[in-house]
Image 1: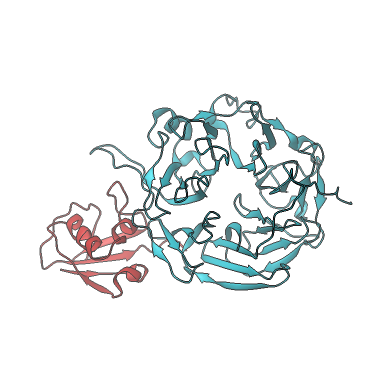
Image 2: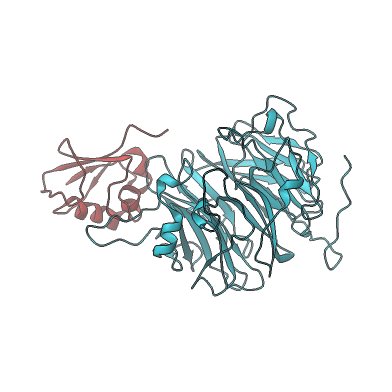
Amino acid sequence: MKVLIPGALRSYTEKGVAEARGATLDAVLGDLERQYPGIRFRVVDEQDRIRRHIRIFVNGTQVRDIAHPLNGSDEVIIVQALSGG
Amino acid sequence: MALKPQKKTATGKARAPGRVVVLVATRKGAWLYHGDPARRTWRVDGPHFLGHVISHLVLDPRDGRTLLAAAKTGHLGPTIFRSMDLGRTWKEAAKPPAFAKVPEGEKGRSVDHTFWLTPAHANEPKVWYAGTSPQGLFRSSDGGVSWEPFSCINEDPQYRQWMGTVQDGTPDGPKMHSILVDPRDPKHLYFAMSGGGVHESQDGGRTFAPLLKGMEVVEGFGFNVNDPTFHDPHCVRMCPTNPDRLYQQNHCGIYRIDRPSDTWVRIGRSMPAKVGDVGFPLVVHPRDADTAWVLPMDGNTVWPRTSPDGKPAVYVTRNAGKTWQRLDAGLPERQAWLTVKRQAMTADASDPVGLYFGTTSGELWTSRDEGRKWTCLARHLPEIYAVETAQL
């Protein structure tokens, strides 16, 4: 499935859209990590919580739990929250 | 006021100077300033990691090549970047510091940022220590490529109680800092916690114990002086030529301890009363254990943490804290409300010693003569978090 990558993470992927597989958001993040080592920890902490200033949307709806199930046609968007400075 | 003459080292020799590079970590990136041999002109190299929050930037003095940057962004999680060519190229750590995952249903901690980096003993060439926010102690044995929790501290129930919660910490999170390694013994370690006190290990980190005797805590609230939770060390330094002597800039003053004594002595009482002895950074002379510099900040009322009365100055003691002398030549004389964070002041190892401090307003100041005269090396930087030097 398509995963839209925010600008802050493109140093890992070198592109704005990545392809990843997985039956859950956790699995997709794991597949991204396999392809782009280091990327997962920048988005999800060691307790498997989505980081405070990161938002993840699946088909336009915000998801807060990485156990969220996915199917192959879903679109995942990782964005930086409108916070910080 | 004239300063006392410098003392020689035990061998009567001063360390051979190398070219100084100043390593500046800021809220929006990192900069390296390469000095000419006279430290009069500086070549700027940067920004590195523009937009990234760089908490600490340290060059390993043991190999002169491994350069580590503790980094995160405003949104992304923390990591460590490594360079082996003075910043020309960088590679991310394969496994940055992270707390252990807790069982389902429990609420575990996550590292917000690595705050402090310390190269380990000379006999452990690739070993580094890291202190994090929230407080955690980590160790790398491969030059910073991968990091593991170190010692019992991170999960020990007693230490977790002493640390308090994130809400008990400084506004930008509680810190583990001032990780010190005894150059005579790699098993002899110290660390400090903002809210948590100073702690010592004699067994390579298997166990740690508080080192609090003689310290004061904030008055008027009935805080238990024997409880590490109420202690707030800002910066602790070990004297390179006398590792039994430590100096400490604490929330409650300036202290010195001479081991094997276990009692700190408040040497800040001899600072001028109008200035006080509150501040963040403290720097020790590389060769003279009686000499240390502090940069006082206003600790009254709401704790402004700016230059007292708007008149910044560094103070030096050359007799281990018996007396202090003001050093402000070249610094702004009025309406200068400077804040310098605990890691943002340092010394080089040249003779005479060069001093450097960076402000939260983005100015980098230097003195080539141990503080007698100051000049502004750089302005208009982002908020400066840490300043270190290396000799190349």
